[in-house]
Image (tube, rainbow, N blue to C red; front, side):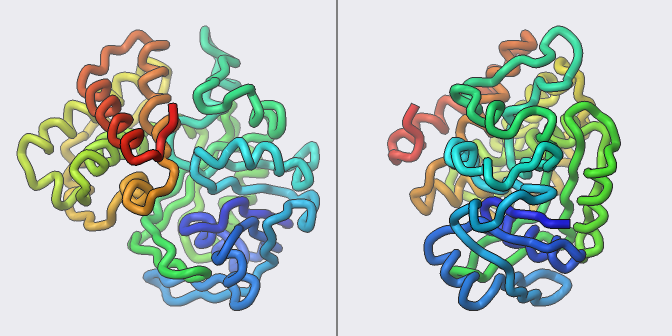
Length: 326
């Protein structure tokens, strides 16, 4: 199986190493100092099961890779238009393209069924560039639990005790391609999981991201610190309840034990990626992670007063930092 990981940062680099250890022929698309380090020394991943170092084909030009069986897109949402412009040389008609990212995916309403089937999300996919370049039939949903960071160019630290990569088809079918990809990930030493309810899995993670991410941006602190404040904890539960209501209104079935969610996050010293982006001056994933769920709430007719306030404040903070331009 020939696989390309488009975006070999903390998540993408870790995934690339696991796919390679699982038997895939892996190339990575990277850039800058990270690319130079991977070319010179390989990718090095520090995880609970040891240090894994592999030499992989690395480039910033997809034309050097050519058509593959699967392209894992692991960039941050602001980079998606650039991916759409460059991904073509990697694609065959049957190439699977898992989008392993946070937030609402551009394909969310594709193959959904019901009154909203086929609806586009211009905030996430302006001018339908991903719809045209990839297409809904190649797209695969992805959810990842693997708190990670790039320690230095080419070197990644995974803080998650048990990393999980969940893949699923937008049409809910348990396909052979998803089964093959998750099996390869599992052979690489972490949990690869296939699901027939990928939107539910997206919301299960997004509920935590909406609460933890917004409050992290506004407080500048990790969940362990923020959730120690009783008022913050109560606000978190309100946000989670609102997010779950959006999900259910659109047919997903997320877990509703929000107290357990808060408890599981309360020990985390790892700063959410969106707070890392703010502190490092990188473009922030406001649209897909924060704004798109509110757009879906309006579509579904769900009231979200707590989310509306927190997202508006996060937008103001991101704009003031020059990291969110619309």
